[in-house]
Image 1 (cartoon, one colour):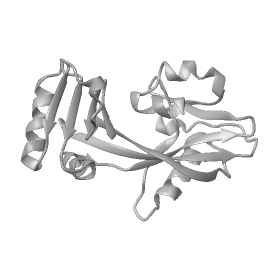
Image 2: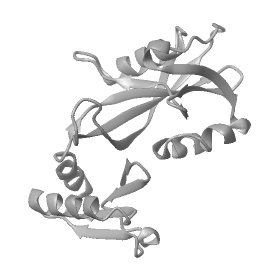
Image 3: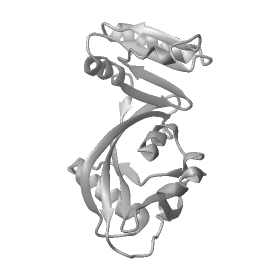
Image 4: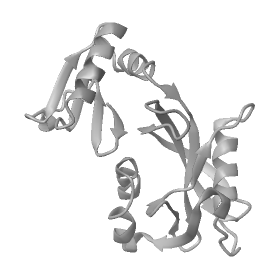
Length: 202
């Protein structure tokens, strides 16, 4: 199952989990691009419906048809842990977040993940470990009216063995970068993006 977050709403791709299906949910069976356009427009036209369920022949095909509706901007980032088993978080636009950023042309996903973590937090020598997951969220383009962007963000587990002082990247509107004990993440969970809450829970 794929989850795509759209503000406080969620698009579920090829899920059979009936727990979420209620009067606030639209369920659509998708066979082609036309079906997908109709389902998405119905969802946009009915903001009281919190969830959209999309099912089809395969979840990969259904996800591909869904992604064709948007401009895609891929990003990469990290869940960084230090020697004290603390997690590195950043504070931007009045919410807690994890360091991440757009993948640049000619750059691999792994290279982008490490670069963005180091640029946004000011530390060097971050070690990339295993791939963790990919999250998906939709947001309005800041440059084009009524244009929606779908951003897949590829997350990696990372390790930092150094002791450099954190330096948030102010030009990217990051005003704080802090290490949090895993037992003290309530402040972060209570003021972060829906797409990240499951990452923190893991």
